[in-house]
Image 1 (cartoon, each protein chain N blue to C red):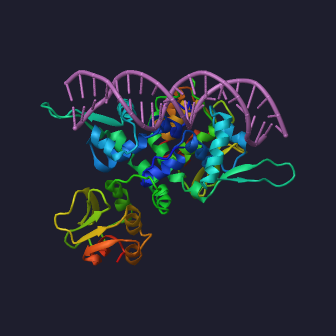
Image 2 (tube, helix red, strand yellow):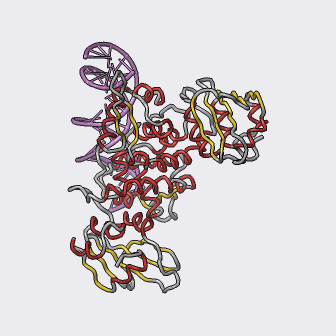
Image 3 (tube, helix red, strand yellow):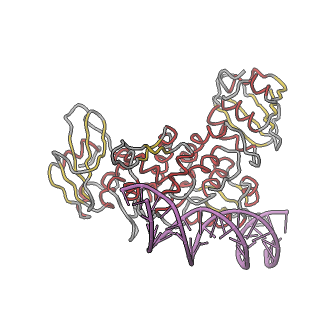
Length: 212
Length: 212
DNA sequence: CCGCATCCGGGGCGATACTG
DNA sequence: CAGTATCGCCCCGGATGCGG
């Protein structure tokens, strides 16, 4: 990107990460850890492949991304964040906080959605309300690949794939799912908007105060 | 800006503030409060005048900026932040934190500098170490208009213009001034790099631990 | 002089095709 | 699978114009 030419910390930061798509690439690597080129494209619907290659190269040069050559046999390269890249976590977090109200209106007609993006909502709005209890799993289905919320020992995490032993399975549109997790909708409101729940809905209280 | 088309809080945020120059405009309004069009240009060296007008209009439509029509006679409009605009403070703050290490190398040959940009460094790195003592003023000169650091009652602020009654006047290049305030240089190191101090240098301890 | 609007050249971006 | 190559287009940058 063309430099702003300003001796100012914010301008210098934007010289590095102010380009289009750049912070979304960082988002992907923050949420899902080191990923392959094709997986990055999967998580960045709409990006042109030449732009992704360009950005990865620029970010590598700026010491934000490191391409880890995978083990010798036939493996493909992995892209991961450096320390400086991880340090962008608070920036992306604050951007997400600021952007959350913009989610209330629901997705635009042609908006894409990836279930691992729920990871931000989960870490922002959910917390383990009963750290002493045994671990529980909640499976979330939004039409795509399912993801699993795991609460155990005081922390709540999101990981990809179905749950081994779900106490609850929630199926809803992304809009309703986000609304329920972020607290904009309660369980009744979410049901009225199409949420389907199979299992023990009271387990929602484990991860969100006043959820069920 | 063209939407990313992703139902994700970070992408939605960047749909609004991801355009070039947008966050720097917010920076100006955060640091200096409501300003006129010409003053904004002053604080945004390098921006094209049509872009500033475009961005202000877009930000107004996005409920980030509000143009306050000044009193009737002949006044010019003032641009200020709405509540949503003020809420971008943490985003800009984290960006500045991340960008601060990029300042260590010093300004590029043709970098511009405005003394009110020091406001970020001041609020980030300085604190009133003796809240009980009487208020003190330190005047900073970097070649441009002087600015004044005021410490009183536990807080440290930066305002434009010379000090009424400075206990200390510091003159240095932007690079050295930032280095001293951010703690990358101590007083001796800053002097060796051209800092000139007139007055009581010990007053630096009032605002920065281990400064003098 | 201030606050923009208009015009125009160049480069970043978007979409697709293509290759090792 | 992991990119590179190519080509329009639109955003951006710089200059100028113009009304209040």
